[in-house]
Image (cartoon, rainbow, N blue to C red):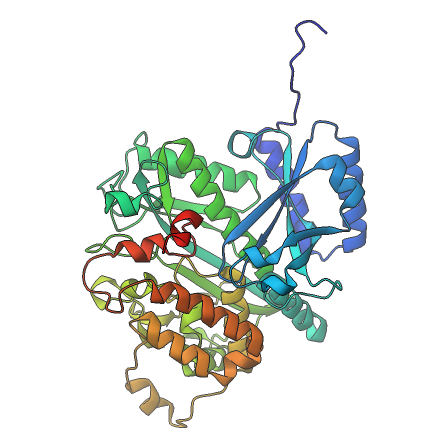
Length: 480
């Protein structure tokens, strides 16, 4: 028809997006029958003619986010038999066993802001399967989801989590990929904590990113510039563990995409610039049964229950074993620097910000643990899975005397080589991940470490950016 637009792909207003995504999220939290949800989604995709593609995403062992766009008509016909080459994903299958399957987790479905993702697309998370359809051991999203389901099935226990993800905003697109050429990052803003004028570049970025997160159903709480120049943080409500980990991946994806549209780079390197505070991913954890917060006891020490303190003690006892999981890159160990509020002490405290676990002032509803020693480049599924299993099933400290144990100050590793050594020798990690996944993870971390100088020194080295697992520059990896 003359004058008719060539493309009429779906574009949904932000307020309607929020309604749709919050309803979808509630279905997950209510544990709606996955089969019924699948039928709803397939019927929707069939009826909505303005959708052209479905983005199916998964996370590899190191935490990189991978996305495949499937033509909607193809997905409706062949959605039960999706495959991909696992040998091309570091930490996944060997070349001899490369074919892996991808199952669609239909309850984890998102309607997308079209100005960020393009019109006519929706997104859904996937689960990686073996050729025979069984769960793939290195897919930590599936492992976390399965463990959370097991806890709920045993007594209705829920894992609640919220992540405070810090990042930096730098001038220019692909600033991380170009670091081997420029040798430096350029700040957008040299302001500081909470300081940003309404119209400046950092505030525009935060506003646009926060709007998208609100539309995706995150349940926004607050957003602001952080302590370091050009540093940002956008906080949102706690939710169940697998949903929370999905939101970490979407948070970083949205930030990167919005920054690129503004000719900037959102970076989640833990310490991209020396001399200023690094970035963390403080993770708030609690367990609940029904409406009862299992970590709360008004009469307990610091308002924490005996179960909560047991959880703390088990994590502290195995802190070195799981440090590589929480701090997975060469660059992450620059952040564990005591001059910049580094959470490198293996202890828990309500006030000491050098402690790896903080116990916030809270009531029966908000009682939780804040795990501070997690870098923003950690695999969120692997981190949450390891923390919760360690907190519930890990060994208790050998010293029986609590006062003596707490008076002694121990420190997390200050370099990735020591962290790899602890990780490889840990019987707990073998139990958590299995020997095969433990070996795969150690291997890919060693690959990155071997490409970098062993001594960190005081200057950021090009190699720790160039060979960082989240800096997706395969060309430079191949030139090593």
